[in-house]
Length: 168
Image (cartoon, rainbow, N blue to C red; front, side, top):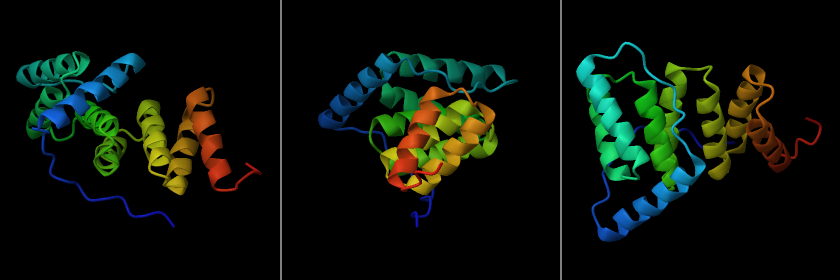
């Protein structure tokens, strides 16, 4: 069976020059994929909306340390921000912090269970972590909602093969 989903962990921004270089590399990889497709929160207070814009700008510029700190500040004011949890999941995935990525992305899923971007990311994070049954569950949810999602179907097929479910 799959390991349980880890409990929320206290995030600590990287401070060493090696950690900063790793963040810069992860940011370049993400920017090449053009990811800033997170679900948007609606009806945010003006100050929280500004903090979110600042966090998004840090993310787009490749400043993952600044982006993480700003998304956490948004969550301090708006704990139910789907966008902030999603973006933190993306940042942790880029840093290869699978447990933290799962916690943030599962939180985003609980807040927005039918969002195809969240389900795809979760399927990919679980695939990266070799948590095959959870990957299959999230990806099956995705293709029910978005049957033409090629990335989701491909990743689902990869996981079916891992699970020896060749009849699917």
